[in-house]
Image (tube, rainbow, N blue to C red):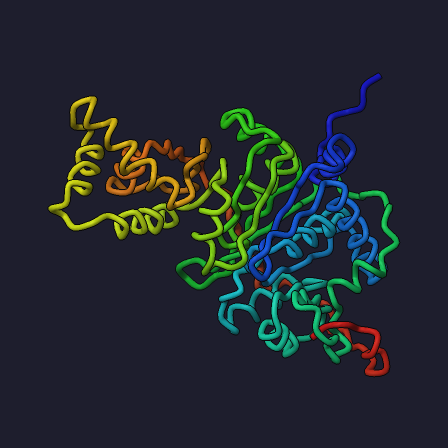
Length: 381
């Protein structure tokens, strides 16, 4: 008798750890160096975090809000929340204070992950939840009793607890404000994410040898649909840049085989290409313009490839890319022509979803207060 196919993200995570325990699953650049985690490392850490969250009272149906850019800790915490049957809601860290207040009021998270001390300060002006501090530099614990250090949460967890996630449970949710200022949300059950990931993996021929680059805002739904879910299904390596400011250099260093972004992402990269080319009257500029218009004799096209196109692909980190995805609206004509000239086949994947208004009358949970005498047990900044 064969085991049933995994049906939730935690199930697929365990599947990868069982079949490829020592293969690299996740890499994140920190202080100029790449740090790697194997699939066994990932499932062990997620299990410990899940146990730590459960010890703190996180249960099925609870919400974990993540105020963070793409980073390793946010992803692992998301999976830990889902392991416990909860839902992870990434949030744009640049959201205004008023917008953050609306989100906290209506979603009533049990825990909120913060990537730095400025976000912690914002969150501590509110009550009703615990703040998980990423504390990336491993500084002195934060003295506030409502703050939990990420490492302490993992260390306190016994690990090895059974996942309570079910296919119909919401795994990820995303929120934004529409043109009328109304808060709307979009939810994705495990079954939906697994199904969409299977389609993506099959269509783009993704496998465990691929390198994916996650540089878009973590709060984007496409991160969950087209990167995180397909990552745990296919077993490729997922790489996070050190910061948004270093993403272009980090992508060039990695030369990923899978890149996912919006039309704005590709337009920005196209501008990098344009900046690298000399003036309009130069022979290099004329050759690439001819390539964009699909003109030129075979010899001219060959020279364009070896002297211009190939080096430019290396500069922007697309030298090995076989799956270049644009999520949502397709590329504009100018950007599309440039990537076609660079021989990068950018394929569009939909970013449609069922956005629903959040009920403004939803009752909030009673604020939780934490005793000051427990402050010394709560690590952070």
